[in-house]
View 1: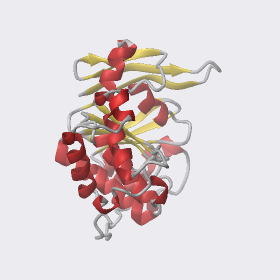
View 2: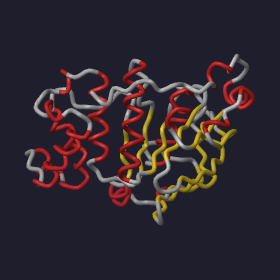
View 3: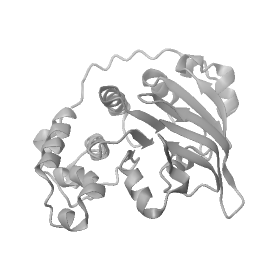
View 4: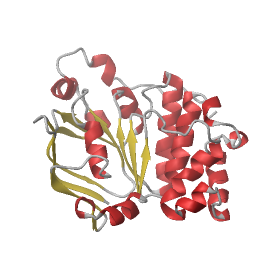
Length: 263
C-alpha cells in the first residue's frame, strides 16, 4: 500500500526533520506515530502527500511513486490520500454539507464546486457519511456553530468522501476533551476497518494509541526508534522515544469504559 524508502527532509536552516526513514504500511492497517514535539511526525505525514517536499528518498502509494509525480499527476494522486487536520480546516461560513462536499473538489472541477453543482451521487454519499458519524441532523448548520468534536467528525467525512486508499491524520484529538478524544479515535479506526483503509495517525497521547491502533511507530529526532505492537511499549521503549520519566502508569491497560457511541 504505502512504502517509504530513505525518506529524508532537511530544511534550509540545516535542521533534519526526517533521516532516511524506511516504512511500509499494508492495506487496512492503522498505525500511530508517536514521539516528542520536533521528532518529525507531522513532517512525515506531509512528505507523503507532498504538502512538504522531501529532500531525498522515495514514497510509493501502490505502484505510484509519489515523489516523482508532476503537479498534475500529484493532484490526481492526492485524491487517494484523505487528510484529517488537527485544527479541522473547515470553511467556517459554509454549511456542514458544503464542507463535506468540498472533499470532492479533486473530482468535480472548479466551476461545478463554485456553483455548488455536485453530482447527486456525491450528495447522497455525503448524507450517508453524515449519518454514519451521527451528524445528519446538522447538515444545514454552519461550521462555526459546531463543537470541536463535531468539527472533527466533519473533517473525517470530508476526507472519506474522496474515497481514499490512505488516511493521513494529524493530531486528531489534540484540541478535544478525553471523552471526545476516545470517540474520535474509535470512529476513525472503525471507519478504516469498514473500508479496509490504511491510516497513519500522528498522536501525542500514548494511552490512546495503545487503546486503539494495531501498530505504533516511535520517532525520535527524525528517525524510527520503535516499530511494534502497542503492548510492546515498555518503560524502556518510552524512555528511548521521549526521555526519562515514570512510564509505569502510562503503559498500564486503560479500561475503555466509554460506552457512548458517537454523539
